[in-house]
Image (cartoon, rainbow, N blue to C red; front, side, top):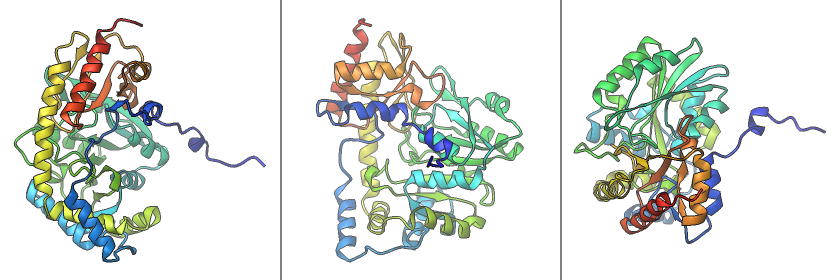
Length: 390
């Protein structure tokens, strides 16, 4: 009997990023800059908190929306870093930040709807939107003289009667763009005038190259009853990528529905991981973030030193997150380039075509590695760019 599989599921294929990583993930000689994580394990005080929770027998179900004390701690972190008062009832901890974003898409988007997405963008967002039955319409950021910029006129041209929401990621993966105050107001005016929900991916909010403790949050500029879904997480600022824990801030009226959505998608976030996340917020987390940011400032300077003046490279200095997204002259196919670089130079990059249309001559590299490993990877890349072989 022919199986009755959904055609959209049968059409799913890994992103070009996943394709390249699969080729070299098991090669110990490869210096991998393709994923969004560093090369140091999670801080000891966070690991110890998870061990204490395990030793205390905290291995049972938790409330579907997360431990109340963790939700209160997340609310307090918004007050501390942004000066925003967030009711913990607006916060749901379903599991990973990706799951939170998936739930937000399922809440807002229906089959036939359209989602505007500022490009370049993280490829898994496309999968989340399309699995909800929606179509993604890419709206490129404008490449300015010194930074990426929001293009509100391009957003206006992209709106159709089917547009339901806009996805914005700031600080952005892969571009490093951080939405400034003027761009935030323009974006909100646009969304309000077109009655669009906002999906705000703010997982890199604490990774910003300024004197502020965090990048500006849309939560500070929108009323709680407005259709804003802000995603946060522990993976990046606290180096907890493998723990899979993040959160979603949503309108208060959706709290009962979020309990159901969290339960049917994941029952509840892993119990002892939530206690580790609580320690990240309440113990030595700020000290860890300060060290991480100092390291990233150094590493960003290293990237600009070794790549910024290369004749084949166009590179804007990132304002946040921990990626460089250079355009490389002479590349026609970023997947082919990354495959060749992996084979010849043992350097793993993410192809630009993974992050949207029109980025076939870009690559993304993560600079969260140790400075020594990063320098070696950049020197190999620079040597490869000097090599004029086909």
